[in-house]
Image (cartoon, rainbow, N blue to C red; front, side, top):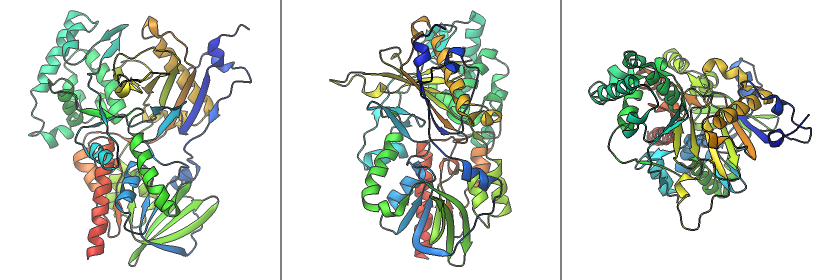
Length: 495
């Protein structure tokens, strides 16, 4: 059999629950010397908790002022704010960062999630506080559709979409209608409605575009998306205001990495990775937390606990949750969200920071080093394109095998290469980071009704994570939720 460079592309699989689509036979027939690495989030204990497995709960061995469960953005932020207290931070992975986790290829950073924040946001402010400067993106998002690259899609780009004139006219009418909506006045009403109510009267290509944008940003297609979230997004995309998005190479994983580097030298003895929490039980005057680490189960106690974990697991490990609050947590939905990074050893695409690709296996692609590309002396050694590849909730089980991951990664590569002739280039490596439940879905009512009911503080257990804030899953939301949890703890101490 004749081999080609594609036979020797290295596929690296990491993360928490992987995804799949048809795979090129050439990739299935990789030579034995071709290695696919399997690493990342372990979910075996979490699934045992989900399934109601009864774990041994030993007596209390240590006591702390406060325990933070979850070492992502929210948990690390809480620990950073609690350095003057005897805290314990528990994280189930063997690395810190959660969904805001940055990886590198030969020293060049690329994202596995959390692409950007906004100037002046909680994420931007925290970054400055810990010594980072998020850099401006300064560029509107284009779309590649039907082989055409359309600059600044929702402003001047609508006149250049490669559709019939009637469809372009429909896009412009839709934009005008959405721009006229007073989001502040109709805030709660809009959050109770599906965005499809506002797209149904227009060309189907409009819904196709939003069926791409929605899953990438808030985990839902048009029919399942809160109209509030979508309308607010489109008003921003189509406004004449300057782009206020900020980031760093490889996304906002730089924030969690910096937080870990600040905390670990001083508090390593109170920061446990590879520690899966299996029970959080309120007791008289304290809370008991049982976790498994390196095959051993331990119970520790604290005056309070901040749960910086997603609610789908929080509801299963926190004892004593009121029925209404547990029901609210159960209403929250979570999207499986693999991210594929295509690593090229020569420039392939550097025309825009974030580019949308309706109708493909991935929704959009980000140029990893966009914000430093013009810095004096900078030379792009590798052109790394981060392809966001959210899946439908029903596809989550497809993320459980290495072959499934390689299937999906191969499909993303094939779709990318077919977008435009100049993209028909082979990468040196393809990395796929798998996550089964990272993004809560911004369905109708989630922001204004479900989240407020789910995050109500218990007497000594407080709830953080992005799904305690909303309206969509953002780094800023995780930080705000962490700060709120810390404030609740301080109020408890002041009683």
